[in-house]
Image 1 (tube, rainbow, N blue to C red):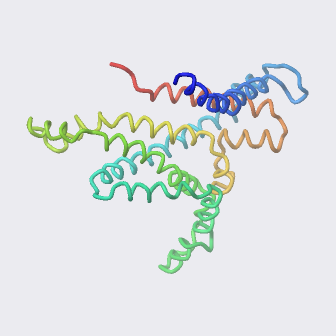
Image 2: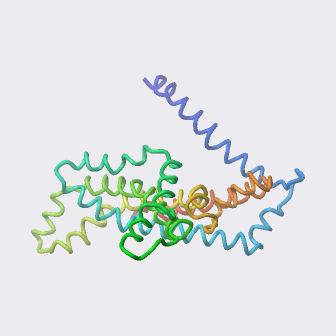
Image 3: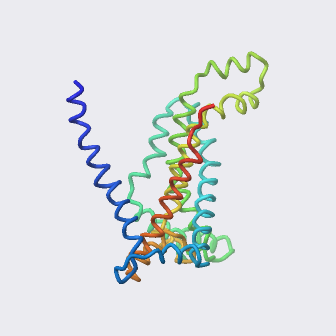
Length: 264
């Protein structure tokens, strides 16, 4: 039985080695070379001494933090209400359903909605306000990114809330706790595992968004993901692009460490 399980685990190990470990090693290796193919530490020196890259880093953290906060504030009450519904699995499926649609298609759909002749500006013109610049703004970028990331926050929180034993809540009420106290002292602490997973699932991808910054932000939103794209596809400076990639990987690992569950 043990030999059989080891045999079936081979594809998973191959997948991890070929598509996770090997690309990371290649990125780290490439980050130590300049455009002439010479080994150097100048890429890292440039990143930490250049105000532009530091600003991009702060922008990435800021936008990822705002997107994570917005999705959390929407997702937690949504997930809580879902656990109380009769057909909660059906409603959960409807929420997760948009993730099946290609990201590029959703981005172009929002470009049409937020455009000068889109649905929102048509409505604003109808009520007498007139068309506004909605597309290519911070608002449009954060709105679309939050919409796309929303299911990834709702799902882990829903699973954590759904696993809570109702008897624990009933016991707290029998001991004299109000509904607010039961939520604050029992429900929310027991759902923190889902909150942590949701933060990881939203904050980490949001750090490296680049396609939405192009299509929705219109290059007004500049992040590290945008810089990586430009170095690899425009300036052909793979070393600097890999350096920024290494910094992002370290930021993601730091996020996972900060949000991990700690034993008391």
